[in-house]
Length: 242
Image 1 (cartoon, rainbow, N blue to C red):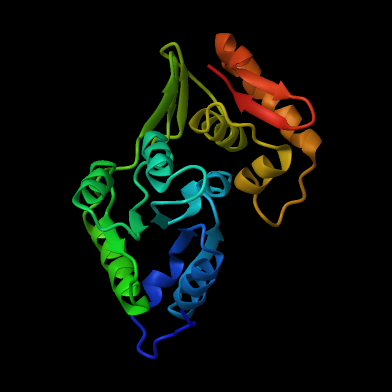
Image 2 (tube, one colour; image 1 turned 120 degrees about the horizontal axis):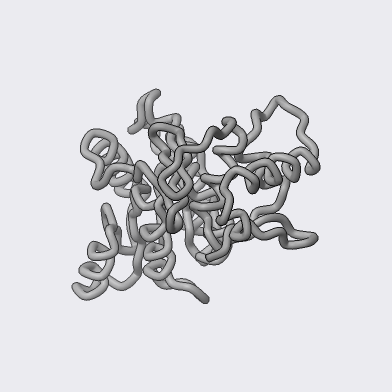
């Protein structure tokens, strides 16, 4: 399959804000899709496995273009994880598959797929499907983004930007709120200091790893009995454990 970029633009200025992650173990296909999607105005990243994709900042993407059959973890397995995480549950997913069977299609839609494209496909078809899904989910979301994330009595209200500990609201700075919501939403995952800096602090601000440590220490003091759930992984970073 050669690279193809259509001359008729299918996206408008609003679409240029959308970021797409293409996940497929065929590196050549990833590059073809990336080339054409970028030509149509999208920001695009690629991953050649579900494992690689799950290491990325998934909440930052507007849509996932996800192959079903890959070496290692399947697209279906990755989709389950995406849907189970409150921070990524509402991201639209379009499955790509070489197997056009009823069972696969049903499985995909039961996992919350927004569309299903069978290989081989034309680039123009992919573009039209992506645009339709993005417009549909923008106008009629399949599910509102969760307003809260919680662990037992520790509750983070993402809409009101508040934190409560066993029913008692606790004052948090914007940075502390960002750290707690990131760790809690990614429960079990280790975040490096640099990753936390990249996610939470403004891009034009110079931040040292020690600054992260100081904010984590302050945050631990505020969440009382749940401080023990924020664990330091020496040499790696921080994680929220059950």
